[in-house]
Amino acid sequence: MSARIYSKRLGINRCYVIRDGGSIMIDAGPPRSGRAIERWLGEIGIRPEEIQLIVLTHGHSDHVGSALAVRRMTGAKIAIHERDRRDLESGVQGLPSAVTTWGRMARATLVPLRPFFSFPGARADVILGDDGLSLTEYGIAGRVLHTPGHTPGSVSVLLESGEVFAGCLAHNNPPFRLRPGLPIFAEDLFEVKASWRLLLARGAETVYPGHGDPFPAEIIREALA
Image (cartoon, rainbow, N blue to C red; front, side, top):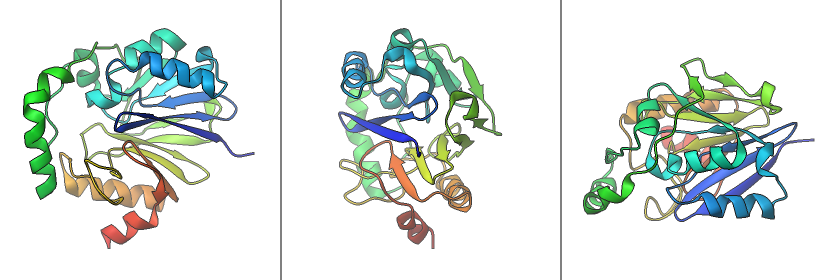
């Protein structure tokens, strides 16, 4: 029996719960999302205390802003890569770097909103390194992989069944993109592409992005060609 995947839209963001022999959450949504997440867990029939681990794909506030609230609700450990740890623990958010024309235009609109990006900092419980993390001990057949590019500490969760939860290694909804594809924001687009080649080589088949609906990984393969 394959793992069950639950998706929650929080504004323009997505967070996920994967449930198999255990349950983990991927990303914790923007600030002040705690109550919405608690209601959602009730709707999908998962008790908060069943969540054992919160994997943060990177340190941007729209993905980690409610991490502290979710940990208090669930008792789960928070996992983040060591290179994005400071962002999570400080609660201070800078502006993302843009790698497309539309990205640069969108970034300019974020400048006056920067004061709203702050969030309650949270201590990391599991510090991820470049070797990633097996999820077997959490009852999930998959692994966290270091996939830098969007940020230096970006990670993805790749299940053995081919689903990959890639955070902002891909975008798939306005105001980012009209169609699925590579991100409009990234620290290093070369690293983004290298990370995707790794994920594809490891068997990624379906992409679950941090923004937008899932789509076939073949779309990314074509973008890299």
